[in-house]
Structures are given as structure tokens and as C-alpha cells.
Amino acid sequence: MLHLSFVAKEPSLRLRQGYRPDFRLGNTLIELKEDLRSFRNLRAALLQLAYYLTVEPDSDGVLLLVNPRITEEALQKEWQSVERTLHPAIVGRLALMVRKEAEIIKIAGTLHPGFEKNLVDDIKKLLSDEINQKTHAKRYRAPRSLDAILLVLLNQWLMRKGPMTTKWLMQAVGCSYPTAANALRRMQHVIKHFPDRRFQLWGFPTEEWQRIVSDRDAAHPTLHYADRSGQPRNTESLLRRASALNRDDIAVGGVIAARYYYPNLDLRGTPRLDLTVHNLEGRADLSFIEELDPALERISGKDEPAILAIHVLRRQASLFEPTGDDLPRVDRVLTLLDLYDARLELQAKDFLDHLVTSVG
Image 1: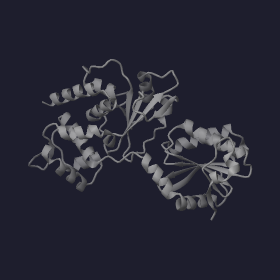
Image 2 (image 1 turned 180 degrees about the vertical axis):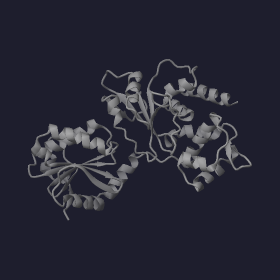
Image 3 (image 1 turned 45 degrees about the vertical axis):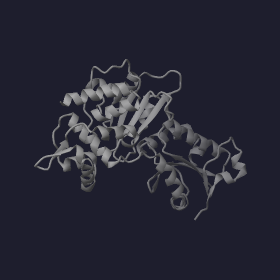
Image 4 (image 1 turned 135 degrees about the horizontal axis):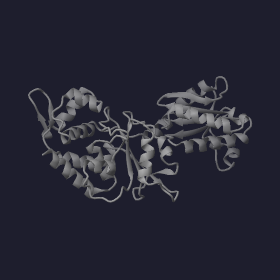
């Protein structure tokens, strides 16, 4: 088995252009990228590694993506562009691999005979703890069962859908019977039961709702994006581009959905676009963000205004509402959470009052 070592230990490699690949496996250099979601970052990583190979003529290079947000099909298509762009002598020494959970697979490129198995074995053995620790922190937290169930119950109540069965709730949330039963027992003070064993909310659960709003990222994880190019697109342009994607796992929320549900919403303009991506596993493909605007960059600071908010919905049924040719809308409850995330507390309260009053 080949020996895996950190490239940082080799002074000659540290000095070149301030960049060094993460690891060396025999004569192969490995660049590791976790949670990659942008074609721009993918191209930059491949170009860095390719440049490094020009000064390491006896080495090969592997770009290893850990749990990327770009589909394998899209990665293979991008590799075709790489083959047309880079010199064949360099492309012939490059490979692109993906690690998803415990599996490592080659997407494209060339590897020496036997190297692929050695890469899998060595990285699983020597780096599994490190990689898993890093990537775990970047995954979306699984929604708490109580939160997911309450959001579905509340939406059904606001839409006057009437009582439901435990089986329906399990299918909508994507949970087991014990999970649903335990959550319903915890919320029994706001649940009305019927003789046929169906149930529904008897009114608005104020205390439970305030708890979700105060820790909404647990039930409604969100990523924020800003445009630092100095010429940002307006939300209408971003929405048109999102609609043109024809993806049934994306829905619009925030101010746009709130205005549909409540035309009297007191707010001028549309400060940002809120999109929700439905994916039960929380590994939504976010490569489409570059198609909306290549200048969009992920931001973490809450003080910087975002022009785009991406929410990830982790339950079995999206409960999106179709709109015809345009993107579907998220449900009323998720729309409310979008408004709170955008710090539009007054509009959120007004919208909530409207929804509760409409139930009667």
C-alpha cells in the first residue's frame, strides 16, 4: 500500500506560488475540496492543480470532491470542457474523483493501474475521521421531528384541510410511526383528536411557533448570497432565470409568495429572492446558483444584505403549490419563516395575523 503524506511537510512544494495540494499518495498529488457547489470553484481548483503539475513533471494530480453539491452528470460535462481547454499532456495526468458518504468513485480522467484502489483504501483508513469531522459540520442539520411535524400540521390548519391520519403525516414528513406518535404526544395540548383516530391542530400554537422562529435555522436551514460585482441583478431577473431552469424541486417563497397569499402586505419593492430547494437528504444540487448569476457569492455575516436566500427543505412531501408556467410557491408556513429570516418582523406579524384570521 502506498504511503499517504501531507504535502505541507515538503519545503520545496510549499514555496511554489503559495499553493500546495493537500496530500501526496506516492507520485500522485491530491487536492481535497469539500461541499463544492460552484462551477467557478471547480474550474479554479482544477486549474491550480494543473498548473502545479507543470512544475511536477513526474507527478499526477487528483481533485477529490467530498460530498459535492454538483451532480455527477454536470461534473462529467464540465470535464469535457477541461479536456478541450488544457494541454493533452496535462489532462492525461489529471483525474476527478468524488467521495459521497463512504464511497469514492472516479468521475473522469486517468489514474495509474492499481492507484484507484490504493486511493480508496488509504483515504478511508487514514483520513476518514478528519474528513467526516469537517464535512459533518457543513451538512444541513436534520430537522427535529417535532419541528417538521408541527410545520406540516400548522400549514394544514391554515389551509383548512381538516383532520388527518397518522399515516398521512408520516408520509408527508418522512418519519416512522414511533417518531410521529412521540411528537404528537409532546404536542397533545394543541392537538384535537377525533373518534376515527384522525387529528388536527385546534388553534394556533403560539408557544411552539415562537420556539421555532427563535431557532428557525434548525427547521428551515438557509444559505445567503450577495453580489459584490457592483452591478447586481434585480430580484425579478433572478426569478426569471430560476423559472427557466424548469426544476420541480425549487419553489419561490419570501416576499413574492407572501404577496400572493396576502396582497395587502405592507412593503415596497422586493429586497431579495427566496428560493426553497426540496431534498429529503439535505444534499440539494445548488450548482444552479451560478446560472442565476456567476457573481453571486456565499456570505455568512448577518449584517451584510443578501440578494438571494436558499432554503433547504428536508421532508418527504414538499407541499409546494403549482403556479402554471412559473416556479411553484412554498407553503404559507415556510413563507412566514422566510420573512423572519429576512428580518421583516413587522410584515411577518401582519401576514401571520391575516392567515390566522382567515381560518376563523
